Amino acid sequence: MRGFRFCFFYNVATGIFSALGDSRTPFWFLAVSSTANIAVDILFVTAFDMGVAGVAWATFLCQGVSCVLAIAVVLKRLRAVPTQGRIPLFSKALFAKIAVIAIPSILQQSFISVGNILIQSVINSFGASVIAGYSAAIKLNNLVITSFSTLGNGVSNYAAQNIGANKTERVNAGFGAGLKLVWLLCVPFFLFYFFAGHWGLLLFMDHSSENALACGQTFLRIVSPFYFIVSMKLVADGILRGAGLMKQFMITTFTDLVLRVVLAFVLSGIFGSTGIWMAWPVGWSIATTMSIMFYRKSFGRRK
Image 1 (cartoon, rainbow, N blue to C red):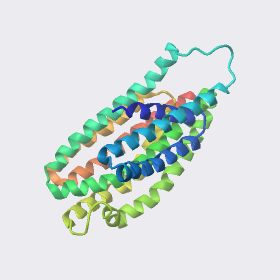
Image 2 (image 1 turned 90 degrees about the vertical axis):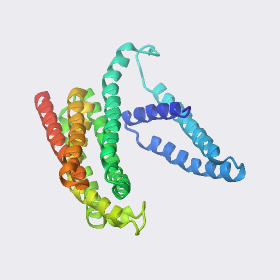
Image 3 (image 1 turned 180 degrees about the vertical axis):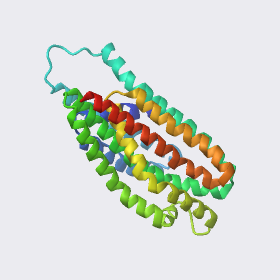
């Protein structure tokens, strides 16, 4: 629990780096911290015989050092920014603006977690094979969605910077560039998951789990063609967040979540476990349509 504050401040520093257009510095902090964590894990467990506690302390120490260094570099960068007069340590006005963006994002992640728990309860009712297949397949799926979300965050920073500089015409170009990048990611993931997902699932299970493998393959073959759809949503959502259009962002996010949860319950009663997987494309497709509509409506008017 103590290490959470390090994660918090490190993510704050990462957000500032991204806003400054620097994504390399936080990457190097993360890479060095992760590599050091492995080395310290081995040291504490083997040399000091600390067991599980050694792993926890290693993570705590490496996260702490990475956090302190990241904050120090951020403060150094900020001191170099020219300003007029003394900048106050705390601003209520800026705090309110940040809260408008942060609170909906926090609620989004919280409700997504609750939604995933509800979907998991449906999956659990189908037995061990379905649970094992889903557990392996969702890890592969999350790899893709995390990649899309990260790129969407980059588009969000890009949109915010250009809107702040009164260059809103560049936002549409950023949306197009973001789409090209996520679709380039979609192609290899779709091809691999749809035609050879079996090999990816074997990273998390063995050949003896035939029913689980079949279940995981079905999930991947149903959802992977729709990566081209959900990636559009995440890019559009990035622009909505960057523009401060949090109401629209929340509407599309909760629409996707509610549809997936409700349809998982409904379709599982008709098609069995396959019906649960079918809920993903439906939720993604409808929410993506809404995100694109909000994006086009907002930026058509802003022009």
